Structure formats: structure tokens, C-alpha cells
Image 1 (spheres, rainbow, N blue to C red):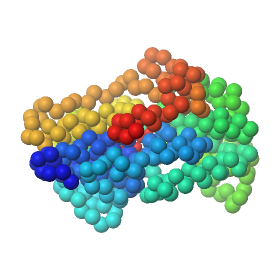
Image 2 (tube, protein in one colour):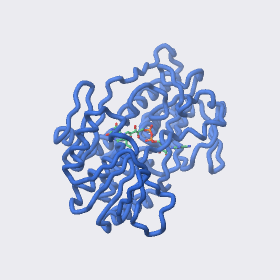
Image 3 (cartoon, rainbow, N blue to C red):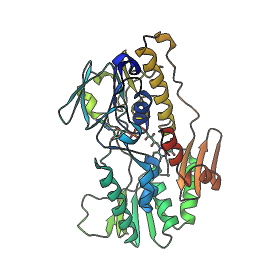
Image 4 (cartoon, protein in one colour):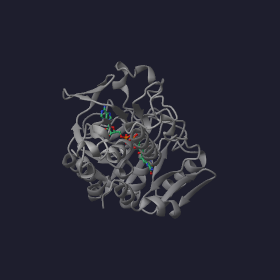
Length: 361
Ligand SMILES: Cc1cc2nc3c(=O)[nH]c(=O)nc-3n(C[C@H](O)[C@H](O)[C@H](O)COP(=O)(O)OP(=O)(O)OC[C@H]3O[C@@H](n4cnc5c(N)ncnc54)[C@H](O)[C@@H]3O)c2cc1C
């Protein structure tokens, strides 16, 4: 820990969640406060790189990053936050960590292993699963299912890929034009897309290759990947002092400074906020910058009126990768598919840019 002078007069800042938003907020505040990051994993993972890592496991060497690599001047607690009180956070491993300022960035629930080594092994075994299958079933037609179908179709064109989606079009988070362009591209790569059906995975016999759908169809596949949206990680807040700040979807209501409404010293950032904008990592990073600045102002006794205001973005940009060279991009007034979105995202998946932001090569 650096001396008091450099650490915001010894003010304690706790960040809950080391994902896209929380890791950057922690990094930005580590030299001006006594910083603690609480995350159940010992690493930060660039989420939009993980479908590539399934077809090319070595990709994860750069996209799965130890917290200690970018957080050189903070405490890292590898556990889950389970309770928040007026001035302390309780963790699942029995700790009680006091704070002057708290940032909640618990985003979406995930079930990834605690250790980075185990996570890299997981990619290896997912890759082996793909390689050893002649046919693959993907359940879910959101960004995760679409990007995985694209990665497999491009890297393993000889494999039969079937994607089953319970909605009437792909990528419901984007507009219909993006959905149509995506469907056309997947179809051109021989991915079979089936709409308006669910796959019943609960009664699947061990080793069975027959997948029954709600429409009465049977799909034959050697393996499957479940790519449905993950719920928000906010259940744990329901019994805390912040329970009344959760909306019906489990999101935290924030004010223009990204403080939880009615709180003086508790902020929320990233996908867990109720901001009316598309849930995107690059916006979550903008939240981090606003909150880091606001906490610095408050720690130095500055005027609250000087805090930065966050304006939700009505014109968010979204790019969905289609294999290594193509993509679909939704800009405010234009939807593009092909190699231009591919050039922007698909090759490196913003891994270099994200690492640079975290101060890494
Ligand atoms: C397939 C796909 C592609 C995407 N592509 C892009 C893209 O190209 N560009 C883009 O900008 N965005 C993209 N996104 C969206 C982006 O990934 C999210 O908006 C971003 O991850 C949100 O960041 P976050 O920090 O709020 O949450 P998360 O990244 O979900 O991180 C939350 C962290 O909190 C931890 N946590 C959860 N519960 C607790 C707890 N109780 N205590 C402590 N820690 C906890 C989690 O383990 C995790 O580490 C994509 C998403 C998907 C699924």
C-alpha cells in the first residue's frame, strides 16, 4: 500500500466485481485510495473474446488477465460479496471490509472457475469438445450463440452447426436489419438456424445425441453449447440496505453522477445499472471513468456540484463478430455487415485495446 499522502487521506474504496467496469474503476483508483477489489475470480476476463478462445484456446492467454497484473497497489479479495451495510461489505469467505466509498459492478452472474489456470483448461476442453464433434448444436440466438456459431463455421467448415433460438429472429438486442444480415451470413456458411423452438436439455440421457425441441423435432448432434443470456448478479443485494434501490429487473437505480439514488457514497456502474442505454462494455468503461473522477472529487473534499455527469447513450454502437474476418455492426443510422465491421472487431476482438486501457502490453 502506498502512503497516506498518495492514498486520498487513507480513504477506503471498495469495488465489488472485477469485470469490465469494476476492474477499470479499481485500476483508476488504486493509487489515490486504500483500494480493495472483491471478485470471486482471481482474474478479469474480456467477455467478448471468449467465443474465439473456444476455437483457439491460446487466445485466452491474453484475454484472461490476473487482477494482480493491473492492480499493483490494491487489495484483492477473491470471494463473493454477500451483504452490504452502511459502511462495510461482507464476503462469502467470512470477511468484513469497511469502506468510505463503495462501487458496485457485479454485472452478470457467471459460473467460471476461481483460478485462471482452471479457466484456461476449460477453454482447452471446450475446444476438444468442438474438435471431436462432427455436428454441434448451439442453443440460443443472442450475441453469444451467434458469435460461437460464426467462430465454429469459419474455423471448422466441415462441421455441421445447428443453432436453435426460441425467438422469431436472431440478435433481439439489435434491430431487424442486423438480424437479417446475420441470418444470411450464417446460412451462407451452412449453419442451420431454427426459430421459435426450445431445446429440452433437462431430460437428455447420458451420451444421447438426439435433442428434442419444443416443436417436436429431433436434432442430431455430437455435442451442444448452451448460449442463453446470463441473469444479473444482483440477487445478493435483495437482503441488504440497498434492496429498495433495485428495480423489478434487479438493476440498481443510479443518479446522474452514477451514485445509487439516495446514497452519498455508493456508486454503481456497468450492466447492473438502470441506465437507459444498450448494455455494452465500452459504455461500462465510460461509467468507470465518471465514477473514478467523482470519487476523487469527494475524497479530496471537493464540491459535489463539480462531480461529472453521465449522459446515457441513446446512439450506442454494437458489433457482433461473424468469424475471424466478418461482422455485423449497428450504428445509430446504419447497419453494416461484412469485412468493415470485421476489420473493426473480429480480428483482435479489442483485446489489444482493452489490455492497453488496463496498462498492459
Ligand atoms: C457475446 C458478447 C459479445 C459482446 N461484445 C461486446 C463488444 O464487442 N463491445 C462491448 O462494448 N460490449 C460487448 N459485450 C457486452 C459486455 O460484455 C458487457 O456490457 C460488459 O461485460 C459489462 O461489464 P460489467 O463489468 O458491468 O459486468 P461483467 O463483465 O459481467 O462483470 C461482473 C463481475 O462481477 C463479478 N461478480 C458477480 N457477482 C459478484 C459478487 N456478489 N461479488 C463480487 N463480484 C461479483 C463477476 O464474477 C464478474 O467478474 C458483449 C457481450 C457478450 C455476451
